[in-house]
Length: 269
Image 1 (cartoon, one colour):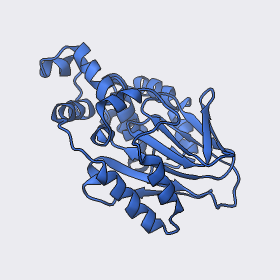
Image 2: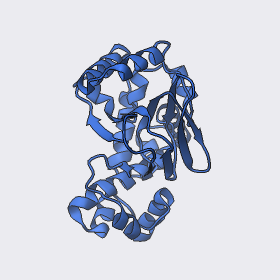
Image 3: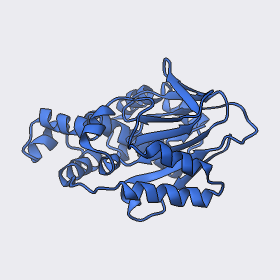
């Protein structure tokens, strides 16, 4: 099974959609598996003629006996998930930026995806359009049709407050309580905002953001202690604890077995 990641091309879409990858059914391999680790993206995965089910930290995708479109959405997971394809299928997986998906779906629909949902219908015409895109033989035509479709659903919304809060969470060493006071909010209100708009708490978001930054930077710096301090971890033990929670392995073991040179660092095959 062939997996290729593409950065979003349309400049308007780039504000909301990080990119997407394709899996192709007409591959020689019958089985593929990889682990995906916690991230702050909203992930929308669309597969044709396939079924998916979740079992004890593992998502298993099988071919369907009937023609169907399967759409799964993931907002919140704090441990690694193993993804297993029992047979090659056609799939497109979209990586929306933390607030990105809100600009395409309604608030009521987003509230339905506060947890991992399998076989979720995003728009009334979504399945029909995805069948049309999968039927296109040329990758460039698929990309153009897909990005145009998402653009047709775009309804820009005002998230200036959340953007300011995300900036503080990502770049400041202030505690969550201190950030709340800075904005004259209560800690509970900040938590509610994050759960409503991001699908996770500000503490979870910050930990995952720092974890991802470490992975991204380690290939350039090659000094784990330096990267740890740069990402505002209090000390090495604090970093090790968070890292083990997200990967189920020590940092040294993880970096020994994972290729951090990959451009799409949230996916490790």
